[in-house]
Length: 397
Ligand code: NAI
Ligand code: SOE
Image 1 (cartoon, protein in one colour):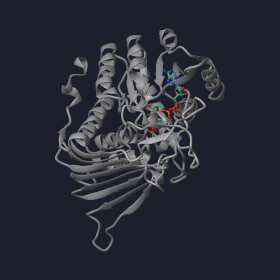
Image 2 (tube, protein in one colour):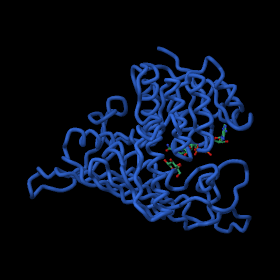
Image 3 (spheres, helix red, strand yellow):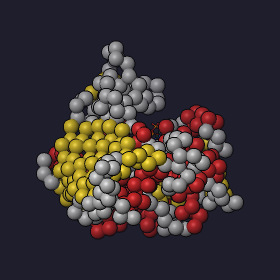
Image 4 (cartoon, helix red, strand yellow):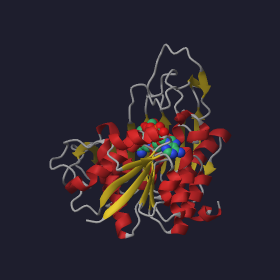
């Protein structure tokens, strides 16, 4: 089996998820398209990089991503750093001819995302952006039903991403609350996942109108040199820093194909953990998905007899998308890890075959254009048209 040599930049939360995915991918997918070789992990200091390499079983470590990108033996650069470093690393990787998988959001701004796309297109490298929730088998099953026409013409999409890890005003000032690092708040961090699902399942979003708010304006500064995502200390009397990004956004959206919808994102929703939901109404039926019950897809069909019509539950398993590579019995349990394993498979397959994978940098750029339209509408109170990545001129930005 062919080896694909990987260098991963960033050994935090996503570093853990991607390391697991590379190790497990050939166990799930047989034959695997290639053996991902975990060559080197990079972090900001040698100590952090060494700790990540030992914990996540990488062959080597470094604190110099530029030197790692220059290494001719590396095939793939995996970017798992906070948002503000994605563009610089990805553009350097593309210029060195490396294939790239980059965490979402592709960049803090659409301008940077456009430059990343332009560099990758110029270099002709394979790209992927890690909107992994598309890879949940039940979401792929929803896509299959829609493509087969099972719910007819789509009229309406209602998507939410609700969390509560930062609902406590004393949860710390993660980089996710700092514009210079994150770009935006709930919009880019979690709303972008819903934008990706909406584009995947329904089609391009052409215009948005939004209410964008920041309810918690300051948070305790972090100490200890690592990101304390979600930890809280209700007695915290220490110094606080400014939150200069949104923490809640609600949008109405129009799709280019005539469908309408809504997208909601907040991390202030007590009791909601990773509440990614969508409900889609078509002329022939409806679909409902909730990531907190991610083995299940709820479906209702107009064609059912009147005394039987209503939502029923389909559990994903061997007969649904990706099922032949996962577990042999329905409802054994799909987890976050599986979405990342499938993501790694689809990306490595495209690298080996010289093909393309979706979502890629074009999708990441288009999602960033939607995110920016949501933020602009939040500022102006107006409907804002979303440019099309194909004509927005990625090479010119
Ligand atoms: P994190 O803060 O847990 O880890 C980031 C790591 O990158 C840290 O170890 C940090 O020291 C390192 N780092 C920062 N700047 C660096 C640089 N210039 N060079 C090398 N290393 C650097 O962050 P997390 O949660 O892993 O997020 C990383 C990215 O993944 C973000 O873009 C985030 O939005 C995305 N993400 C995506 C998720 C998904 O479900 N697809 C889930 C969580 C995060
Ligand atoms: C925090 O909101 C976070 O880690 C996001 O950054 C991820 O994209 C999301 O999938 C899980 O929550």
